[in-house]
Length: 383
Image (cartoon, rainbow, N blue to C red; front, side):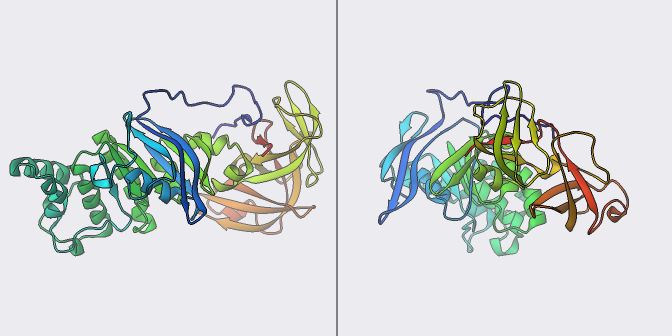
């Protein structure tokens, strides 16, 4: 990935901001939910565009599932409102909302065939038989399950059950599709395969989708935008690359992927650069742009492992380097992650592409190495 300047403290170029206005498809305004005095969702406001796949990502207990259930109508907000295409959803029960939800367990009726499961919602709407047959056939063809229409759910694999659940969710043509941990019941290999397949089906239908997940890879792969949640609040909203490359806080930087946080103080504060003194490093950190800060300010440089280069000999640059010993190695085939312990005891993670046949031919345990990074490799964070 290209090196990116810090945008959290006013780096060059400025952070991308979402130009969302009165035509937002879904608007969540000041939403709050309390359970016996416990605040599960705390003053959340969001705007979601039509046709967008929007992910709510966070650790267990952060409030993302509660927020999804309020969108579906299964929970009533303590305060705030939800608008869909300009219409308030306040007070509308789930069956009167133009939404549909696909649960983690898929919730297929075991006594019904695939075809009957998909047709169930349409039958509840009392549509003409010809319309039900046409729509059911369309949905089964969309998810490539036409040949298995007469099977029962227990005769299907996990991926096939997921396709049926999705077809049933899309059959009534919902204005908003809600996915609750859509890949949670699948093994890792099948999950990776189904992520892009699910995205293709949703985009082909042009439906707006909000999904809940605690799986970072799933959110990064499937979503157009992601909202990071913590303790009932939204910490950051952005596209996957914005969230990863331009985190707005130590929490977001640490939650998405792996990151090295180098804590220190601003030593030199100039318009086109700053320097940071970090107690864990023998040399200063040089950042090739200015920030909205001041000398002596406490900051952290968020440095992704893939942005760090590893060397046997000391780099010629004066700043942005560190010396240490390889303490541990995690081998992933295409790359290895080195755990390099500095003299201070600080451990830095370094991604190294295994271009050679045997990774251990270059670096191995207990090797003394040097690390270096570019002046725009990290993000300066103040919160």
